[in-house]
Structure formats: C-alpha cells, structure tokens
Amino acid sequence: MGLLDSFRRHRKIKRLSKILGRPFNSAEFINSIKTKDGSKKNIALEGLLDFCESNAELRRVIDSHSANRETLLKIYKTLIANGAGQWEGGAYVPVAALTQPWTLRFLFENCDKLHWGTVCILLLEYFERNESGPVPQEVRGPDKPYDPLYNLWELEQKQKDEDY
Image (cartoon, rainbow, N blue to C red; front, side, top):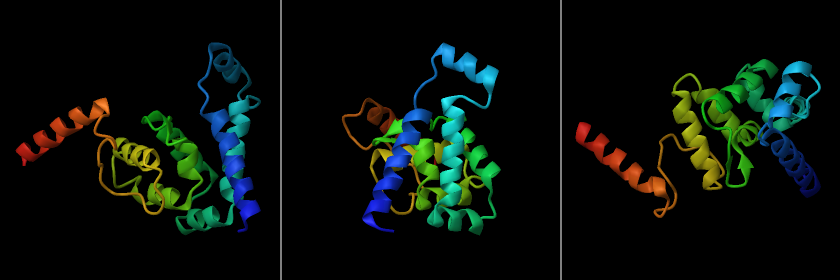
C-alpha cells in the first residue's frame, strides 16, 4: 500500500467517522426512524461495512474469523450500546476499531471471552493513548494523573487489592 492509498484510506475513515460520530438531533432521529434507508448515518454505515469488506488487510482478518457483514454490523452496534460510541485520541472508536486490523482482530478474539464493557474500556484506552499494534488485555486506567477519574481509578484498584 502506497502513501497515496494510505492517505485516501485515512481520509475515508475520517469522513465516515464524522458522519457516524455526530450526535442525532431530534429531527434527524425522527427522520431516521421514518426512512430507515436514506439517512446520512445509514448510508455512512453501509459505506463503513463496504470499506471493511473491500480492504485487503481487513478482509484477511474477517475471513480468518469466518465473519461477515452482519457480524461487523452487530459488533458496531454492540460497541455503541456498551459505551464505546465516543471520540478518543481523535478517533470515533466504533469506526476506528472496525477499520484497523489489530483492533478488529482483538474484537473477534475477545467478544466472547470478555464482558463487552471491558472490551469497550480497553478500546477507549487504546485510542486515547494513540496506540498501534495489539490491544492490551488489561484495563490500565486513565492515562493522565491529573484526570478527575484517576483518583477514582486508584480507589478501585486499592479495593480490588484488598478483596484478594
């Protein structure tokens, strides 16, 4: 894959993310219920699935796990339903997770092993830290010590240690 192909791929993922990651306003929501097929988000979701199926790297991962378009759609919707439908590190997590080979492989290998809440947290941390390569298999907590959730994270870890 050349530099130009990489740029095109990135631009397409960014465009799909902007559409799919935009919150619904009430008029769009009502329109999407009425039309089902013609909303921008539905068209972008179809574009995302087309992208996943047409990209050679992603296709190898999909085929190696005997997955299909319906599997990808189910994973996308499950990620959103379990809290991963947010932006981290400049990426809309559900789109980014399906369009990178490492994260897609992680999803296929762990969606039946781990609780979906844990899967979502691991992906959120992965993208928050702008990581590449394999997704870590354990929750590491907030990346920045000044994050308001860091103190909560420390308390939870101390509680876990005391429970053992």
